[in-house]
Image 1 (spheres, rainbow, N blue to C red):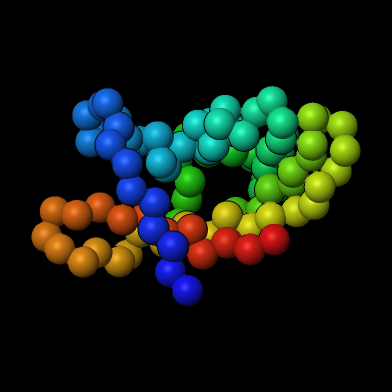
Image 2: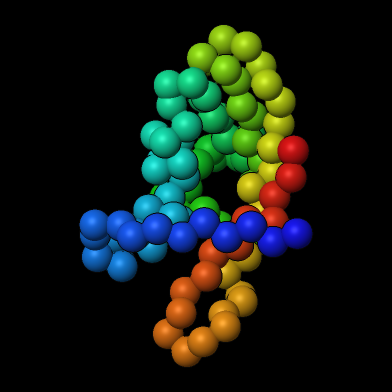
Length: 91
């Protein structure tokens, strides 16, 4: 099954692209219901690095929910000039 979400953002394409690649934005949109902590040495980078990134998630910052893998892949494009970020992660 393939699920696609499509909507119009009121911002420049480069700003949306930066936000999609940002662990900080991921944490901000998850809060306050979920807290996300990096399990990688050195913590979160400015941009999600390619490959697997382990995170720990807790509800309201108190109740452990579990670990998740954010597995970033930027290698696929369908058309010239199209930018795609694919999270192949899992719980």
